[in-house]
Length: 222
Length: 409
Image (cartoon, rainbow over all chains, first blue to last red; front, side):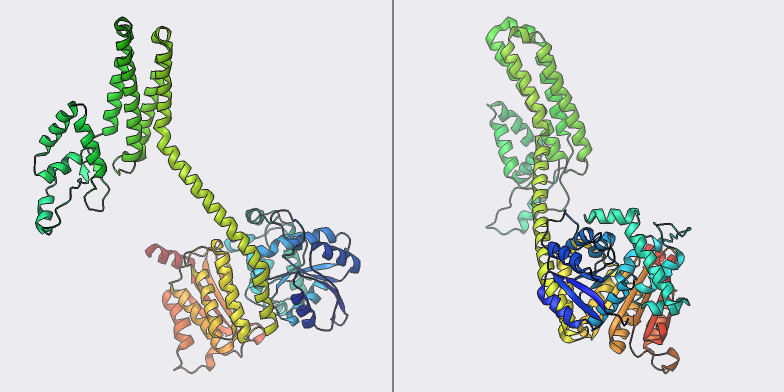
């Protein structure tokens, strides 16, 4: 965690941006700020940061009904800066606010109520290639992939269901366990936990599972 | 069907308030004659006969009947009025008779000239009016009647429609169409309009429903507009306050409670209104946040059939209260309902405690959580949280227990 991570903060509230900047620890360098979709795309393609802290709800562009400004930024900027990771910031805990952004390509999300230390940790995790899951998002994933009704993936390349191990990891995250606590509980390494979480994130992004799409359609997210 | 309640009511009523005329709820057609008979103290058949006889004097009795029908209220009571006479069918039969007679007499119309023509047109008009009346009666009167209802309404309407359609066809194709084209087509047109009138009450009702629907939609749109606006302004600010004030400070707690309240109000449609276990624990967590320096995160997975009043919910609430009181900070609550069991995990990051260290006379955890679960047929355990930090309470309730309880409840 020693190396400095270059970050662009995208949020339409200047107070929030400055507050967040002040809170982030000194391993994180804020190289740019933006307040709407256009300026965000410009700043991100310019600065090519390691991580973009991205508000889910952004003004400034006539987004097609239902999709969020945050998802739009990812869609427009991701190709220009392949090395950049996106971390969604949401004012709400609601998975439905967030899954649209995740499916657009964000590597995870944290709520705006999180402390500066939490955000910093999440930024480092995302910069290192890991996914950031909150308990709520883990709960949603378990629901959406039918884990509660006993659906388990049989093959490792299956996109529409979670493997038994992934379910265990998600359950523990939903119970409020940190990655290293999950690792200790399951007698696996933290690295393995991160691999499982990344695999789940990939499924969340790529799965065409009925519940996911039906649910997203119902809220006109996709 | 004669109801002799009025004299009794008269006895109990005060002198200056004479008993008011009312129609019995179980009646023949409208209850008007029975009500009047009761009021006057006459046998009901005399009243009926009087109505019929006076109707022959240029319809005076009929007018009086209609007037009384409109203005007389039902007798007081809860049950819906029922009618023993199939009025709609009687009207249909009368209409059929009129129309058949009209259909059978075109020859005589031609012989008797202009006056006969007017009588013939009057007959057709009466037939159409009676069929329309049957339809209206079925819709307005029979439909709410528990003994007839929508099926009777449908039957009447079908018959009335057929009757009018056949009439229109017979008129257009019949001999009168060539003898008196204009009056015949007017009569056929009247029959077609009659078909429309049969359905008019329903169309009106649907129109009203449609405009109600539209009003509702507009309100819904307005609400979501307000929600979007508040989401971008007030909720952001509340999040910022929590962020700047530190997670467990007084200010942050108030901001969080406000945020939750506002969110509940804004997105009220998203959550089911009935109180299941998940909703209940979420509400309880919100209440704890106001009273204690704690943030409670409740995650619910699966379809929760367990009710909020059950033993599992009581034990879970107790565990949450313990965590808020003794640990504080962040508390994670996870509820999962699968085919086999409903499980609740309550996890805090406080100083932690072990059950073995709690003296035997301190019954809080032992009795109210573990004992309660065991007595209810489930199981519970209290253990140090992952990595030895804090405490985790695990509650498990087998699914068949849940279902059994639901079946009884």
